Amino acid sequence: QVRLLESGGGTVQAGGSLTLSCQVLGGAQYYCTGWFRQVPGREREGVATIDHAGATRYADSAKGRFTISKGDTDTEDTLHLQMNDLKPEDSGVYYCAVSWYYVCDERIPQGDFRDWGRGTQVTVSS
Image (cartoon, rainbow, N blue to C red; front, side, top):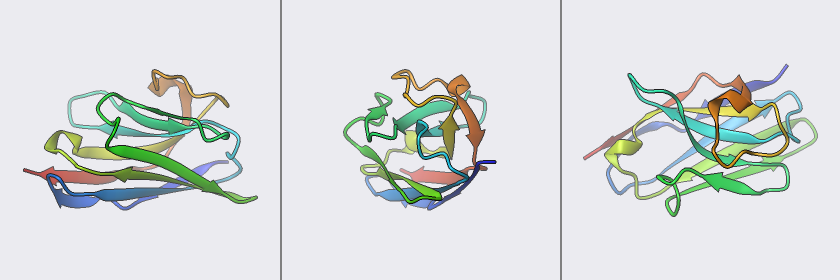
């Protein structure tokens, strides 16, 4: 069974940076993995994904400011999201997730993902 443990959230001023990390335990190395953001009253939205070959995809709001990366060993993946030039609209709960599929859909649909972490809060103050 895959388990995901996020860390690295916090409060930062606009223009600042944060790096989120996610331990992916349970042998999900070959699947598409990604980060999602949710704010109250809105659906969870995809932010960035990365597949086993390292190919990345980003939501328009994240392009040029966020970088997703991963490292993996035989038993554990670590997924990162480097977020620069943060804006108040980047605030929300960030979740890491593992897809059903090896290839990441460029639309980053929530329904493609089967395993989720509990989330980490990011707050960007203006």
